[in-house]
Image 1 (cartoon, one colour):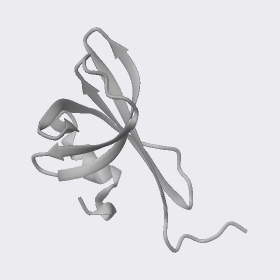
Image 2 (cartoon, helix red, strand yellow):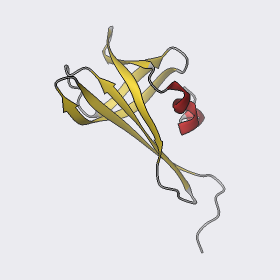
Image 3 (cartoon, one colour):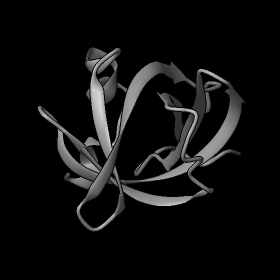
Length: 106
């Protein structure tokens, strides 16, 4: 996926859709996008996060994973497990992007 598309507006229309995370070559795990939220407003940065829900096992350790989506295609995201229960595990991806040409603070 083009890095310029790593924006909240790219992911928000795909809430509650399935992503596949590659856990090793030829093996994937289903994840559902359950949240896409904007972070605090900042004049020089765009901030947002995505929350995915996957099965209880296997637990994916924090790291960068290749994800596939039927509409968005392939992308690499850094996922962090943030919560879990017997029904599944939640993983978060956080994005902080500086805004080019944003005015500097006085």
